[in-house]
Amino acid sequence: MSETIIHVENVCKYYGINKNAAVKMLNEGVEKDIIYKKTGVAVALHNVSFDVKKGEIFTIIGLSGSGKSTMIRCLNLLHRPTSGKILFKGKDISEYDKPELLDFRRHKITMVFQNFGLMSHRDVLGNVAYGLEIRGVPKAERDKKAMEMIEMVGLSGWEHQPISSLSGGMRQRVGIARALANEPEILLMDEPFSALDPLVRQDMQFELLALQRKLGITVVFITHDINEAFKLGDTVAIMRDGKVIQIDTPENMSANPTDDYVRAFIESADKSKVFRVSQVMEIPTCMMRLHDGISHALNEMKRNGVSSIYVVGDHMKLEGIITLDGLLKIRQENRPLKEIIVKDIPTTTRDTLISDVLPLAAEAKYPIAVVDDQGVLEGIVTKAAVLTSLL
Image 1 (tube, rainbow, N blue to C red):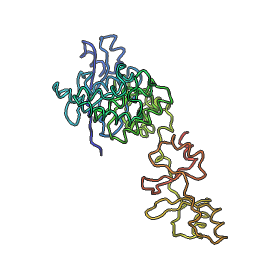
Image 2: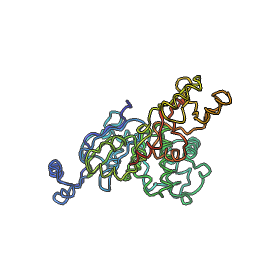
Image 3: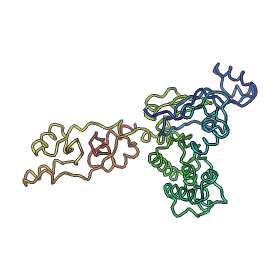
Image 4: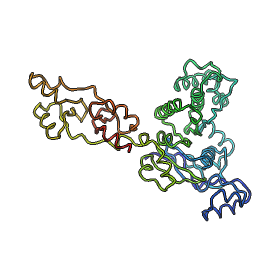
């Protein structure tokens, strides 16, 4: 199992004087709006606990006022919890002295905001290099590192352009590049794509996934969009009224919502962006090896009632498909079996989202083969299985 990099334990955040009365009412199940009217205490967080594993994307979803933005700001002590613990690699960050906290914010954790937070008087390069500059990194070194990040987020050629000339999506790329330039272990993202147009937002989600997988960085991502939470998150936490209602993988949460509130959230989700190929794939019943003959292939097709057969080589590596028409043709012409193997067939992986398989399924003549990174056949996905998963 991956190691825990952030451990949040019973974190509370209250604003107001009469906190003891507010806590008593919370423990009695009183809603936070009523607590505020009676005590003047605003409950932002109450007994929030969760673990973030190293290298995962941990998404927190909730409506306005749920406490999600307060929680993410507690992770770098922009907000100090009223009570509870936040451990980074086993050490309580509330116990950091000023130099330790400064080092933590400069080297270990960084944040990308919804409104980009860019400086209009600096060009793209100047914005990306800013964090390195305040750390005292020499100009040549910081410019080199900043250029690497600019290239990584797809903004090569724009390094000397003013921020005012960039689109919203490009500005968010600059914000991400600036955050990554410091090589943090944890990237905090507070609804970073919510202000973007839908198509740009979709592109940025893909870019974030690609960057995170490439760099192995840990991401805590805040959103109010269930589809975004499920698309990005390895683990998802749903918050309501300052409390965590459920923490789980998108698949498990969809299958086992903890209450009606979570169920209502999930019912609004696009299921094609929740379920993965591994949940709908089947074991192929009709297979043959390269050295098997024509008669074996025909018998397998007849026995399984299909008109095509998957061909595998050593160690179950997928070679392609042979069709019934092809078999009948070479039997008449006495040609080698290898000549009719259809190698250009659609493939996918077990972790692929159903939404990404839909275009393949619509065009495919055969079931989609599921292979691992070595090309080993693991299963197949039929059109019927894809469509059924959306119901």
